[in-house]
Amino acid sequence: MRSARLTGAGLVRSGGPGAAGEPLLLVAHGSRDPRAAEATRALARAVAAARPGTPVLASWLDHTEPGPTEALRGLAAAGHSGVTLVPLLLTAAYHRRVDIPAAVAAAHQAGSPIRVRVTDVLGPVGTEADPALLAGLRRRLAEARPGRFDALVLAAAGTRDAGARGSVGRVAEALGAALGTRTRVSYASAAPPAVDVAVARLRAGGARRVAVAAYFLAPGLFHDAVMVAAGEAGAVAVAAPLTDAPELVDLVLRRVDAQPCAGG
Image 1 (cartoon, rainbow, N blue to C red):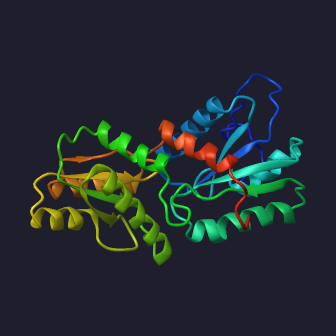
Image 2 (image 1 turned 90 degrees about the horizontal axis):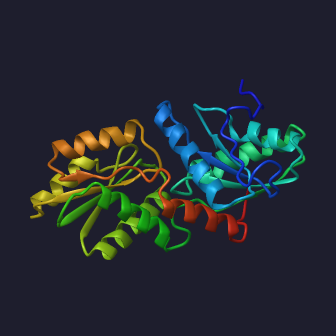
């Protein structure tokens, strides 16, 4: 059973002791790989630094403590009357539609009186990919130093949700348009094509230098597998996950400052 204590769980306060401001709860997917949790904590620290006076807490849906229910209970016990929950998710699939509302409901059923406002996910809202998200992907791609490339694969974790895959496709289309490059999508699980297949198809179609942009928030087994498979297929570079990129911090805070989305 998860503990409701916040000690060591990633609560970050900026602005010194007694900083006032409604806390932010960042909720990540979670991974067995400890690098993923550390990436989420790094993002929480960066968000706190960008929003002085606001307590920022990281939590995870699986594998790492605290879970969002326990985090909400702990915040309520600490005297907070309200919190803004930010789903650190790139698509509005099962975790956003089911897991997060269930976690909030469980906290309320346990007697936590805290008011919870849930923001949109970090991926596209409606038909548009956020410029900050695209800028973060471009930053990580430039850091990978691929040099000149004539085709690009956007590698994502994968989902069986057709609507979520459509949102990944919109990001790929917008990123390709911004870079003036042919772009295809690949998935590490749940849906085809795999990244090596996508790279091979682009090379078979005449592309000589194919780069891979990583549509991941944190490192882990999926990103590791993408790096290996893409390299074996002849990709010239694979970008790192977004982690705590400044553009991602900006996107989180703009989700916080936007009007609340439906359903929490």
